[in-house]
Image 1 (cartoon, rainbow, N blue to C red):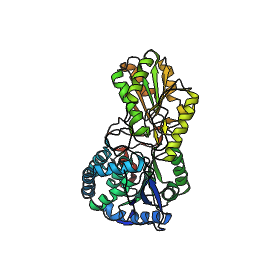
Image 2 (cartoon, rainbow, N blue to C red; image 1 turned 135 degrees about the vertical axis):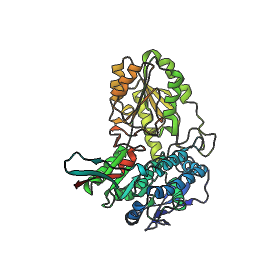
Image 3 (cartoon, rainbow, N blue to C red; image 1 turned 45 degrees about the horizontal axis):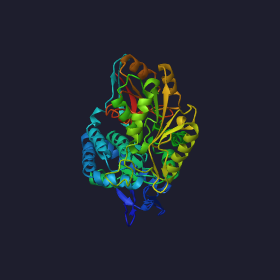
Image 4 (cartoon, rainbow, N blue to C red; image 1 turned 90 degrees about the vertical axis):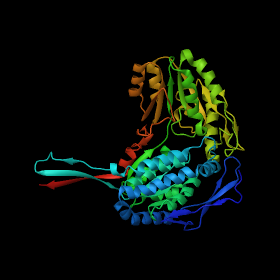
Length: 478
């Protein structure tokens, strides 16, 4: 896994790779070996301002291009993503421990860019003759300069879900990567240049949130900002926006997703899917079903089958194709998850795992049962391979427990009773509900986002395009 010597990264501003203005960098360490794998440029406030200025200067000309002309760059970028999957997978493994086995984020990202390459002509307004003596129309126009702040767990997927629609709508973009996983974002900056995007249209910054992230959140020339990450950071961005220019905000935040398994459920589907949901990416997924509620009559059977499936992983070096369960992203993440596991042992019954390997930041798949519903490990987002399995008797009890959270990103119900499934689809306080499926199952053409503190607004192929467009009413007297 060694990258001797460590990678040296730069910022991508106005079509050029540049060092940080103050030459500052920070060390990025492998979560598996703890060795320094990269010295990453730390974007300063001056760098952030320079990227906004470049985007502002480039935006009018970019917006004046036809959707077909803009789309040509997006198409080329999608092709480059597809061609470089192995390298992108390796960089994710080095930076945050994502196993290369099964890595397909570059393909998901490419499909988004391909879609938005042809979506520009869908941007249309409306007309109305309902006011006597007037022909009235609406125009959909880009905000101008927009920002995207992406998470460390699925960087390329978040990159494509924000940058592609913003560009298709005629905006120019400043993308800030997470300090935990900056390598793929700065790598694809090479593809931005190769795909023919004009200088300033896409700018990519690396660094910590309290510097460049805060500067983007409060910048008066940034008119819209899309963020995926923690609820705590979302609140900080919202406050900064309120104190500056009230920029338009789109948030996809945390989750504490429930999966409800009734006695009539198909366990051959429910068991592997709920286990995969909380094990994939070592549980570091906002919509992972970290709470599973099982009807009493099938609980022993379900729990035994779940233990066998959930625990069947191969821990190891994330760059090894045989590895299926990698380390947590860094020391801070490992300490946090480890703390929750310790608390879980006090509030519930440990049924599997609970082991933490500090040398490699690896936490084995962990199950708690019989945990009090008001326990921290049930109420708060753990963001690791840790699941609580509790028992219920009635529909009313299951729904009440599932909704007893300040999060509402994803919920799932497994049952063969169609009427019951519909009742839960309506009753679950969640932005997404899976019926006989669970996360990470989504749909390409459906909105993605959460209730309560799980987010503001929605993302999705049409929603994201709308997020980056202003709406103007024009009144023509005839």
